[in-house]
Amino acid sequence: MGFSYIMDMHVHSDHSFDGNHSCMLLCESAVSKGIDAIAITDHCEIDSKTLDFRAFSTNQYFESYKAKKFFEGELLVMQGLEIGQAVYNKPLAESILNARKYDFILGSIHNLENMPDFYYLDYGKYDVYELLGRYFDTVYELCLWNRFDSLAHLTYPLRYIKGRAKIDVDLSKFSDKIEAILGLLVKNRKALEINTSGLFQEINETLPDKNIIKLFRDLGGEYITVGSDSHYHQKIGAGIEQGLALAKECGFDSTVIYQNREPLSVPIE
Image (cartoon, rainbow, N blue to C red; front, side, top):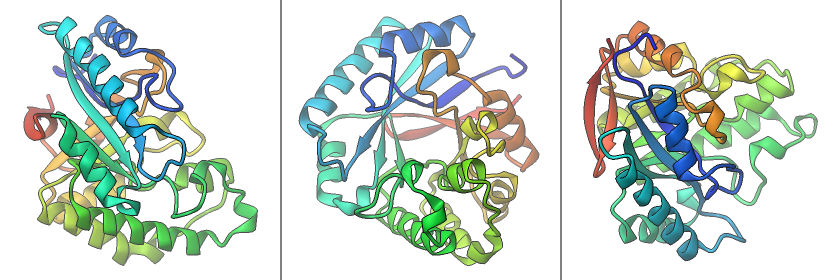
């Protein structure tokens, strides 16, 4: 790979509802690709009506811990979660975070309250600007909650609105909301994720895109994480080099990894 240190800070194992491979297989694949570090960040969707949160968090933590110890010295494995929709049940989200000593927590919003994931919506039946306005308001509330380390895929709905449904969106209509979100990240010294999954989907861009990443830097953003959002072992590390190059282009000289919820700077070189 073209960079001296490659990390993938957003990876899903088979403990995610849409994951496919074990923590051990994910790590084996990362090692085979010359990756230095991964964060196993399985979905913990706080508004799920079917997830057994106690069993999930216990099993996921145990399996990621085994992988962490087995690959010690060969691959840095960070134990993490992607906490989805935490603001819909903050006490539950906080109880899950308090129960284990995680390395890294992604914060995300995948759906509006009492609605399906943006993945499932038929956008011919909705006003996409109304949906996006509510989405960014919810992300802002998530940033006020402030119990995560990095904000995942800020422009998540565009995967499906712009990518799959081919609906052009003028994001400038939400410039105030986006800047307010980024401002909170800066104020609270949180990271913004460059999610590279979109590079291999119909949207063909990172989530968020270059303009938002650059704005985050201009507002004083310190921390960037880069993650593939892989749900298959074969896709670990996909797009990470492009993500690092984009971070560099936007003015970042380093990215961060996390241990015990503390950011550690890694030069982009």
